[in-house]
Amino acid sequence: MRPDDQTGETPVATGEEQPLPARVRRRRRRGAPMVWRWIGTGAIIGFALLGAYAMTSDNVNEATRQSYSATTAVGFMGILGACIGALVAAVVLALVMGRDRR
Image 1 (cartoon, rainbow, N blue to C red):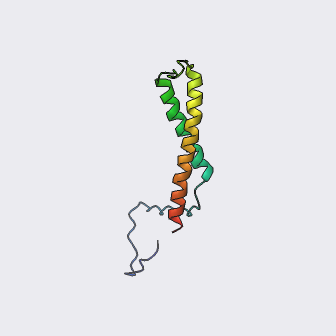
Image 2 (image 1 turned 180 degrees about the horizontal axis):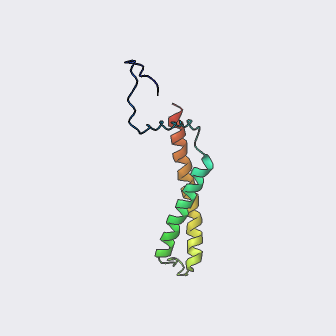
Image 3 (image 1 turned 90 degrees about the horizontal axis):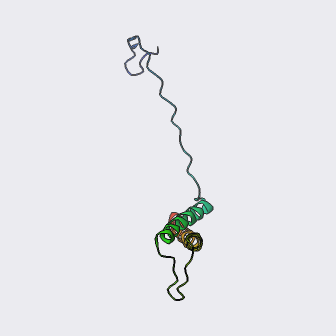
């Protein structure tokens, strides 16, 4: 046991050793966000949203009265949703990165 630095007295032993404090881990500040993860996440969310919409809506073209199968409708709407979601994610990412640089 070490003497107390402030009073010069030796602390009384209580029978239980005090645990040493755990090392504090400092996280390094990350750099720019990973672009492809943002865009991929936006594409997946867009595909899921418009794919779910296609599953719950009527799959009939009003102009020609032609009916589409559920898988075809989910495929087309999912691809459209993925493109829109990726575009929205890219715009949000550009706004976030632009704000960090100011």
